[in-house]
Image (cartoon, rainbow, N blue to C red; front, side, top):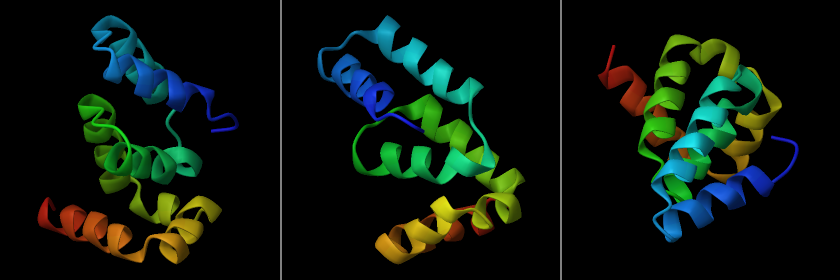
Length: 97
């Protein structure tokens, strides 16, 4: 994600229980998910905000296209910065196979 603003909007929508805005934000992220931003979306939902539908969809995307996601710079950065979280996600992928 180029800008952090969409993440901030989603945080605010959750904080102030603006459910319609929160759902719209999650839908926008889901519509734009790619191998390049999947890791960032997963880490956002894991560390900062309980965006349930976004997390569920991003995890399914990782499960389906794990080799593509893991070949990105974003995943490599995540492995360096958050190795435990990466391992947890990969364990969950393996469990669901």
